[in-house]
Amino acid sequence: MAVATAGGDGGGGRRLRVFFLPFFARGHLIPMTDLACRMAAASPEVVETTMVVTPANATVVASTVAHAGAASAEQAVRVVCYPFPDVGLERGVECLGSAAAHDAWRVYRAVDLSQPVHESLLRQHRPDAIVADVPFWWATDIAAELGVPRLTFNPVGVFPQLAMNNLVTIRPDIVRRGLAGPPVSVPSLPGKEITIPVSELPDFLVQDEHLSMCWDRIKASQLAGFGVVVNTFADLERPYCDEFSRVDARRAYFVGPLSLPSHSAVHRGGDGDVDCLTWLSTKPSQSVVYVCFGSWAHFSATQTRELALGLEASNQPFLWVIRSEDSNGGGRWAPEGWEQRVAGRGFVVRGWAPQLAVLAHPSVGAFLMHCGWNSLLEAAAAGVPVLTWPLVFEQFINERLVTDVAAFGARVWGGGKRSVREHESETVPAEAIATAVAGFMQGGGRRDTARSRARELAGSARAAVSENGSSWSDIRRLIQDLTDTSASRV
Ligand code: UDP
Image 1 (cartoon, rainbow, N blue to C red):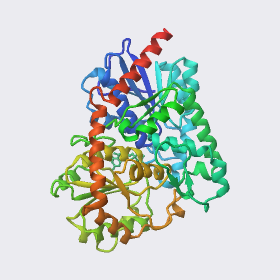
Image 2: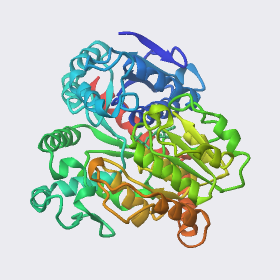
Image 3: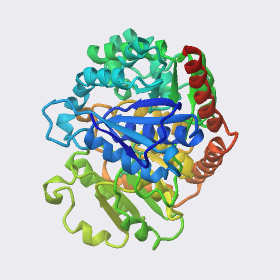
Image 4: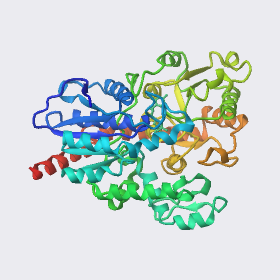
């Protein structure tokens, strides 16, 4: 097992050694590395952080650390590598975004297969604390064996976590109603009533027994652990944060946004296409709709084609990130002559965009997104209003936070069946996309309300991570709690 540093040789000595175990997806690797950087920077003389990753994922960590710009060797984030389990994937394919859609299950399989190697690595290094990602339920047991605290890092917000917890309590009723049953009202949620059609609920709540057992196991491990760290800020989800601290964790730390949108964030999570930033600079202020569905979601060729036609018909400038798999087959998705017709008005990134730098750009006026938690938080922190197009997992629940609770966005489409299961979802037609995008970008009504709300949130996000802000304080409270626990052990 190789031990290396991404940014310096660290100091060692008597610092508190915190090990981070991220799941195999960029939406997890990036914010967890951000957290490791934040903790190291908050108290370099006290804390030393180490990311425990497989070789291909180490490059994501390295580029994220480069963005965070560790100012000194003491703040450097160490990297410990272990081999990715053999799950039948090609060499170098070690996360959801690199694996083809039909191979995603293999990446999940690697969670359990990586348990023995994780455990032996932790026994060998004996860290003072372990911050493990949600799927690594077994981390609580190995932490107990080593006599150190285990924290859960949860890469989704508090609102979706609470909603899912509360929905679990009525799972038998949801299953009985079946997929065609009436919409479900989320029980015992503070604030506004939230109602969701069954087709928009994650599979483990509706039909998948195996996933449901995994959820129970994960929750038990989270509750038995030292506490939970969440990438959110109190002003975005205040009543839910209070409730979460009461029922869902022995200790809760709300430490986000772990990374703020900024012009210099060009290498975070990977080498992005920086030409799009130059292109953005040729466009008027707030005129461009940025279209990106996260680090691994896949669209069918039919849906990709409708989106292309919709963006064309909207007549708005757009910056669209297409995952390489969507554009497989030599651009089969692109309608005849489309690229020529939108030339100059549209810019297509194939692969990876420097999203934080894009969102910080003054030309961006709206973000058409899948409601992945990181993207949602980044839009709020950038003050960019959102058009929502959720696809899977808890993203339909996140959408309610954007549209109904925090109110900084609107749905792109509500005219047909939407579902977390792609084969059940209706294709969103080009005309609907064009109408929603043009209506939102032209301003007035919904866009203006969403924009002013997004601006307020951006101010709160910056205040939260500034000195003495709520997230700034929670990171320090976390370090203090770990230091006290370590001292009491000695
Ligand atoms: N991201 C990026 N460039 C891209 C696509 C994604 O920088 O082209 C980043 C984005 O800023 C976010 C993360 O990847 O931090 C995606 O996380 P999210 O929770 O939004 O979606 P997921 O990929 O987990 O579905």
